[in-house]
Amino acid sequence: MRVRQRRRNRATGTVVEVVDATDATEPFDPADGGRWATVCVDHGGVAQHPTLALARSWAADPTGWCDDCRHGRPTINERCLGLPAGAGR
Image (cartoon, rainbow, N blue to C red; front, side, top):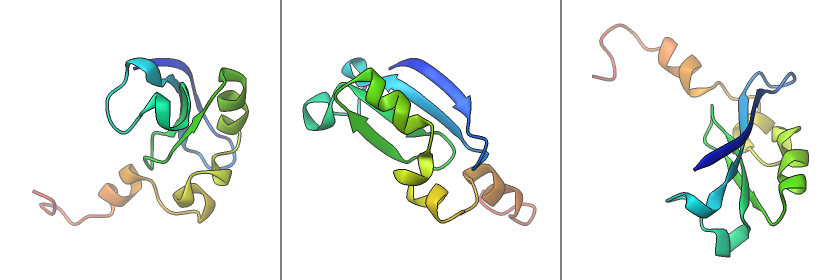
């Protein structure tokens, strides 16, 4: 999977990538939603698009397609930091 853009969103603080889904494995299927995908790296949200321009425009606002960003939920790293020592082993 080739990453075309990667940046931290100012509003949510999450990392968002725009990727080429043609050479990716699950969960991307270019036939399903398009060649390009926006991915919320911190929450795992994904949206697929037919054009790179559309994917880049969606990457600017992950609250429109990532449920966890929309609801202000903590990132995976923040959740792990809140675990007591030894939990999750």
